[in-house]
Amino acid sequence: MKKIVLITGASSGIGAACAQVLADEGYDLLLCARRLERLEDLKKSITEKHKDINIYIFKLDVRNAKEVKQAFENLPNEWQQIDVLINNAGLSQGLDPIQSGDIGDWDRMIDTNIKGLLYVTRTVAPLMVARGQGHIVNLGSIAGKEVYPNGNVYCATKHAVDALNKAMRIDLLSKGIKVTAINPGMVETEFSEVRFHGDTERAAAVYQDLQPLSGKDIADTIAFVLSRPPHVNINDLLIMPTAQATGTIVNRGK
Ligand code: NDP
Ligand code: 8X3
Image (tube, rainbow, N blue to C red; front, side, top):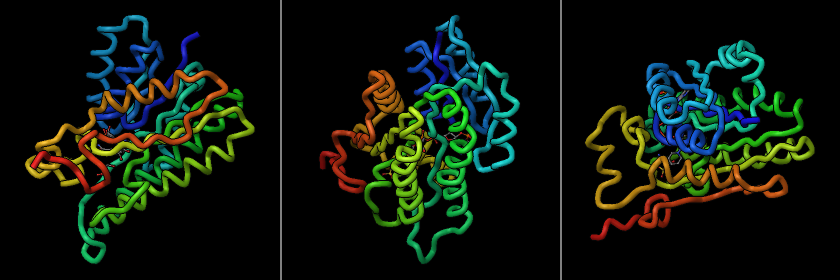
């Protein structure tokens, strides 16, 4: 029987790459995000390559607890047998000092990266507990391991993901459920464009003169983590571009 992976934030970047790579690995895909048209395109392109992979897409804003609960209650029964949850939906907004940060930006990061991840986990973990199996993969960040100038609230949300990852592993230990954190450094996706509110020039400068990670680099790593035998769990991985030593120290060859 094929395994089902649920990927939040599958409409772009790391989430979309996970969908492609895990389809190659034979997983059926349960994909959600706010931009349904993006998911439709992704489904079409994966289906063209893999006729045998089942894909179910649905629109979801992880910040809305009621919407999250209803979306999973409304899933056809066979799609509720979720083997892997990739808590990937997340974002950064703004890069400002604490004394002048935008409160709307702060709310969006906290509501998505912490509360959204909790709402989805609270809904999906019981389904895994009932089956006595499952694997939850949480997208943390280098920003959850250290703090960098003006990263304040984004770093705080990813430190929260780091704490929740450890907490989930403890609470789910006796239930046969694996919990893994994947903590990337710079990955070239829509992340910086979203952080800088659509300023594509400023976003491009982040990745100038160095080779960042790609979404596929992270997806390949997750596929490796998921392919370990039942008695092996990778708790926590920090994965950086070779050109990046810390959140802020990078080698642009200059
Ligand atoms: P992208 O901006 O390319 O993708 C983010 C995804 O999250 C999109 O599919 C977006 O879909 C989804 N999303 C955002 N808000 C919501 C919401 N409220 N409800 C549902 N889905 C949402 O960025 P990445 O792929 O880079 O980011 C994926 C994860 O990786 C994030 O958690 C990020 O913090 C983390 N990360 C990224 C790094 C990087 O350098 N890129 C490094 C370390 C960690 P939609 O807008 O359609 O809802
Ligand atoms: C995204 C990477 O370095 O901008 O989490 O925090 S960073």
